[in-house]
Image (cartoon, rainbow, N blue to C red):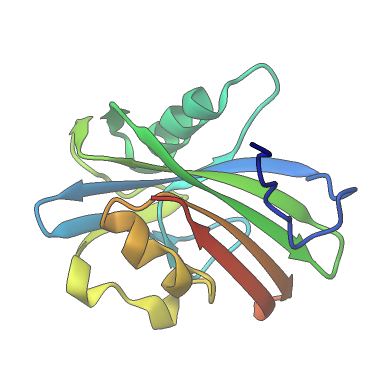
Length: 165
């Protein structure tokens, strides 16, 4: 039996020039999001996360970023998906998305982020990156995915999302 190959919407030569992560912590029917104050996406609402540093695994980077942005330590994170972003300006970003329910500490505002809990049916997609509405609701329901998005600045030019479970 021949195994089918997933055709990637970007050219086979596409290689990210930035590796990052996002973390979505939930409690009951709420998700912890941040008002991002610095860096890529400043002014938007998103999950905490950021760049992976040399020598770190994706999971180590995710935990470090949540600690830096919210002064909490997530536990038992589950990798739920991968995001591939191709920006017209040359940024090619690969992002691993994690979900978890357990953490220690109290979410605290830092110079990078202001935390806020949102009900799952009240996530402010109009204040987030345009791609989030196409994968985040399903990921929060437990579905794994892969997504590819092209952007010019903050404008999404194309999208493809494949849910694998």
